[in-house]
Image 1: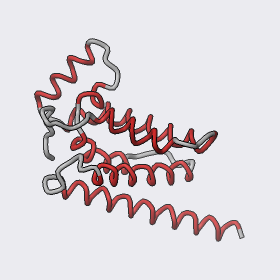
Image 2: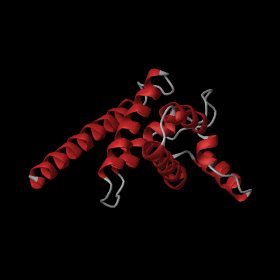
Image 3: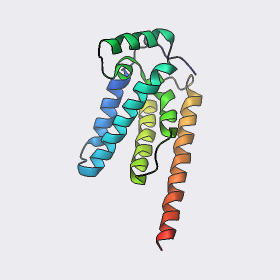
Image 4: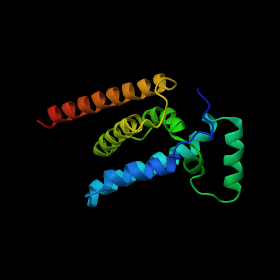
Length: 159
């Protein structure tokens, strides 16, 4: 896995996520808004727990120092979109309890949209991260297909 460095001139993950999720929340309320909020919170928690092990040694040291001073969201505030690209597939494929299928559908749509957002705004080098990006899009497709099958099967059982 490519070890992202903090020296690139791109917005940090935190700003990317703020912008993306704010645009997704626009005009939503109630349960629909909570589903978007839940996905953002889960993604941010995943980045904080899994992200540091995926970056260069120097970045890990900076993140560790930031956490000692109580900095919240250290990974998202100090790392850049290339690290996010590499962590979206593991986020999507992480083990999760079975439960709210609609929340999962929303999560998949949001992660797919976030990947396209990163690509559309050229927030990562497609040549350098082609494989992780393609793996992510493949995971999105597989997950959508599984969710569709689940919906179809539950519809048949209800009859």
